[in-house]
Image (cartoon, rainbow, N blue to C red; front, side):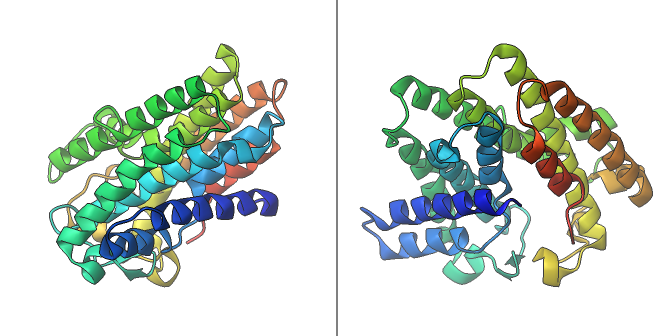
Length: 292
């Protein structure tokens, strides 16, 4: 990651923490919400906002509220994914999951809190015009809701233990994982007032990133080291989840990763006459060649 842009990631996290500290009537829900925000992670989604804004030659700080809101939604989704009724995981990012520390009821409410307050963070950003804030709320809520992440999560649950087609697998991941990776890039394009052609190319690039991210996660679930990835390997197989590895085999999944990377690079080449794509190329490398 670019050190300058990582600085904006830190600023986005501070924005979230300051928001959670203010006006909270329950120390317990505040502590549980902050616990998962401070659990770490690479902050890919906020970074996407800042990298895209930089490609337009804009101040990345214009995307702080969008980056913060999207990271809050991502964190809430992890809290809920780890619950016994969902993936039933004990570790996340190398430490105990939220419900293992705070209990299931508090963890559910902490996730609910992060989701709800994310829109407050967007609405309060008076540095952005009201019409831009409305568009951002629409983009982020659509990416998180029934047409996005939640819809994809439900498809994933319905597919457990079943033989599904490759098209069905792509549909699951395009929504469950991909929509919340498209949202940061789309948010930045809105803030930058991108023309329709540029925005369309960026959204296609973002969709490829979402699939690349999922393929790499599936590979790491087989090959990853918990001391680095922060979670136990082999959980997908134990839960009979359909993945790129279960569908293509490990080597086949790696081949798919390379093919999609080539497609994403072609889009960036088409964008290079309009934008400074250096940071977006770096982002592509992070998504396609994520370290264990």
